[in-house]
Each structure stands twice: as structure tokens, then as C-alpha cells.
Image 1 (cartoon, rainbow, N blue to C red):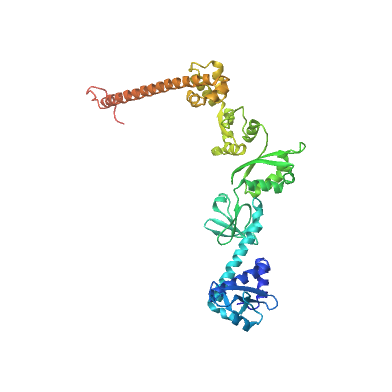
Image 2: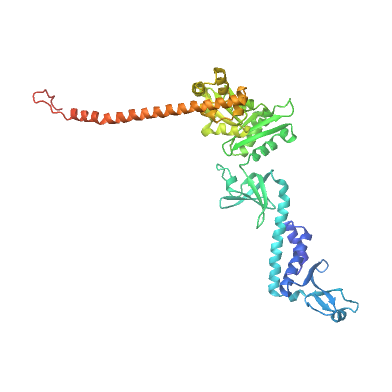
Length: 459
């Protein structure tokens, strides 16, 4: 097992890329474990690799004492002086353990320890190599598939692309090249695990960094990114140089740069949007290609209402809400979109309800509507300090307005309940009359024809 160890160490060093001193340390610890298994765990045993001989030497150390109490750790002065007359009490005696004395079981133990230690060394090396590459792009080859996960060969290590990090519209075969985002690096039980992602927004940002030199150099900066992997993405960019158009830099000549990114993402559509510090302007750009008529901002709830022309509503929302959802992710604001017709209806309804509150004049009603209040219920749910700030009144007056809103709300609820009762009564009355009408129709259908009536001949 240990013949020609120097050559074996060199082979493993080249194939596994594990430092030679680490391999020697692994070998020495394995031999110590095997010796302790054979001779006892309490013994003081050391192993040293002899470079000249190309083999491991085992030594057992015992302390010289007058009377031996623990024969595994102590040796009598008489026995020690038989080995060397110079020994004194308290000295440490090193006894050579022949490798042949270990036996088959101990040799098997050494083999298992060596395999485990080499795996541990590989795991540690892989972790150290990739721990600083978290958040970067990496390229590998698809090797196999395990329970929906894709195992990617990175050369010196393997990575896993979990099913949850895969794009549903993408398919791969064994041997395909794959470029992914390094999501995490963990110390797994069997090996250091590099976790990849094809859905993370960082993948899109890193691809643009590769394709656009201005981003790599810091002239153009990616401010925000939002993705629905495999379908659509939005990216907001700004420029540190007034002479550099950030959108044009990302698009490239005849769209060459953005098309390279789209191709790598297997056809995922990408909207490149100019970033603006004004949230309203940023939202308007993010909701493109739809046009926006008006924007209402509520900074307290960090939300916006966008009013769009009736014919632009479907564009603004997008297929299955995709456009507005990405715009909200990109800007970080909650977005509500209304057509101009619907907004006019909501505003008129809000004006009708709020105008019923006796303590509010017309100007205050319009002010509350501009700040997003659409009903007496919303005003009743508001905090007094919020109403006071909006209407520029004292907090005590705001509390009185909220109390008045409660009374108006009670009246509206009673009216609504009465209206529903009236509708139910009307439906019940109609249901009672319906059987009589059906009976009349049956009588008419079943009426006898007088004998003297003119009956047309049968066809």
C-alpha cells in the first residue's frame, strides 16, 4: 500500500491539483489513525514521511519514569537505558513501529482515512477557489442530470444548477456549453458545492457588463434590473458622462450589443430604460411602450397611480400584467394603472361620497382626491396626523372630520343595505309572478279549436 509513495503523491498532486505538502500531511494522519486502531487510542504516536526513502515512518513516544503506571505512555528507566544509556527520568523515548505490524485491518483503515482526507482537501480547495467568485459569470459543460438539477463541469470542480434556478423555456443536453451566475458556494457533506443560477437578475447585469465596455469601465451604470426569466426583462441605466448616451451604449451599433445578450438568454426580450432620479419620470419611462397621461404619487404608502389613455391600457398592463409587474420591480414603487374613463368614474364616485361629509368644503374634497382618497371608508381609516398634514389643519379638526366620515359611512352602508333589500324584494316579486305567466301560456297552447273554425289543410 505504501510502496513508491513519492510517485503516488506526485500523481495525485497533478491529477487532483492538491498541494504536495497537504497530501503528505494526509498520509501521515492516516498512518497515525491506523496505528492507534491497531495499538490503542491513548498511545502517543507520530508519523513522518521520509522523502529519501519514499515511505512513512511510525514512532511511538513514551516518557521515562521510575515506576511504570501506564505502559502505553511510560517506559521504565531500566528499559530506556537498554536502548540508550544516556536516558534520564522525564525524557521522551521514541520507538520505531514497523509498518508490517499494522495488519490488514489497520491498513484498510489507513486507506479509508486517506480517501476521506483527500476528499476533504478537494472540498476545501474548491471552496477557496470559488468563494471569491460569488456574483460572477462562469462557463461550464453540462455533464449529467440529477432529479431535475443540472450538473455542470467547471473543469476543476462540478457545479449544480438547481431546478428552481433554471429557466422553464430553456432546455439543455449533455455536452452543451452553459453560462450561468454563481449564486452561492457552500461546504456540502460530500464536496464543496457551487450553486449556479440562470434566473437571477445578476446574470443579465453581468452579461451587459461583458458586452458593454462603458459598463465595465464605470462610465455607464446599471441602476436597477427586473426579470421574468425566459420572457421579458427591464434594465435601467445611467451615465456618469454627459456625452455618453447610456441607452445607446447598451444597445450598440444596429443593436449588436443587446442582441448578443438576448441570444445568450435564449430570446428573452429586454427593455433598456434611462434612469431618472425623479420617480415619476422614471415610472413613465419604465412603463413604456405605453404612454402616460398623469401620475399621482403617494409617498407615505410608496405607491403611484398612472392614468393612461383608454387605448393604452392594455399596453401599460402588458400580457398577463407582465409590463406593469416588471416596472414595479424595477422602480420599487407600487403601481396602480387606470384608464382615463375609469379614473373619471372613480373620481366622480369619490367626489360624491366625500362631498356628503359636512365638515369638508369643495376645495378640501378635491385635495383629498388628489392625495388618493377614493371613499369615506378610506378617510375613516386614515390617521388624524395624515389628514391634518394633507388639508393643512389642526389635528383636532382632522379627528372631527374623521368622526364625520364615520357617520357618513354608516349612512352609506344603511343606504346600500336598503337598496339590496329592495332589489331582493323586486326579484322575489318577479319570481312569484313568473309561474302565473307560464300557466297562461300553457292554457293558450292547450286551448281547443272550435269545430267551425277554418283549419288550413295539412302540408
